[in-house]
Length: 475
Image (cartoon, rainbow, N blue to C red; front, top):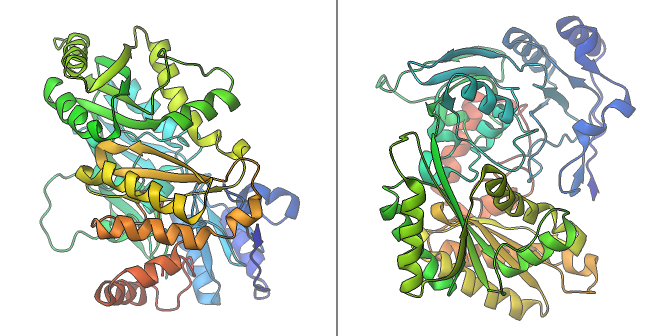
């Protein structure tokens, strides 16, 4: 784990000015209380900061940012601090945490929108939407602690992108505090607004480098009334695309989740997470978790699932399957899927890759990447899983059994570079939904074209000419 230090000293009187803005409960200066704000999910970094400022309103964020801007002090915006690329790690900058900004400002069920503070925890927004007989579909493993502002800043994806789109597609309007403290009010719930540049897209996915998102208008959908969820064993990896295509057709394109799962992920989940077990008899190399959902109660998605699986079985594409007969069993299916992430740590060192390729290239990517990393590091254990319905493969690599963890991690850059090369040849991306942060700055600098980088730098220079907003991240 790298400790980031900068030796930054705050100007005299700045702490007092910040405390006056946010009040006694809004400033954290005690080192013992800073732990949750400076730790990082993967233990790749441990940051340092002179203080954590916790404003409770957009106006307070504006005053904090302006005060720091005028003093020439850099800022790291932070949401739930669940990111996986070091984007919220401070290297001596002031951390501005949005934790206290957790208010749902308005729910408009008729307009199918919800206006929220950026510090709202994702799961709480799902619950509020359900209380109004609506669905906010963004769903990911960290939804119990991640915040919508962080989801927006990284353009988070999750398990339902195939049906509802990623965070960018779920957002109609934003409120943003710019690097000089100005507030941009773009909180519109309009579906059509053709009045020049759509500025919200500058800030979605920018990881806090262009400003601090303080509020958002997000899309809601009719609450699903019927679901059918199945756990299946595939004949072969190459069959997954045919199965996906058939599932979309058989369900009336109501597939809301389609997760690819290799055998090794099931093994480690059962080994390390209590409550997981085999759903199917026998051992198979590849599995998929499929979910249909619809707000139309008249649709018999259970029958649609049964017919789809029966035909796929008869044609030899699916070799075994089970359909969830209760919400509890459905939860067990999804629990296994989420446990795959946490279960990797007890297996030793792990090299993470979050890549995407065109859906049609997913099997080819996995096969080529497996062969390449196996040649580079004999005994390496690929765990290729994820949202095959949107082309996002979480291509994680566990160290060889009884191997040396540090020796393995020392090959991180070399191995991730090779994996990225394979994805890029297929017109894919080396960062699908986790962002750039600090971890992938070099990759962005070397893999983006000069034209793209110049455009990004021009935007950064225009909005943040002093480079005080989350410096060292993305660019």
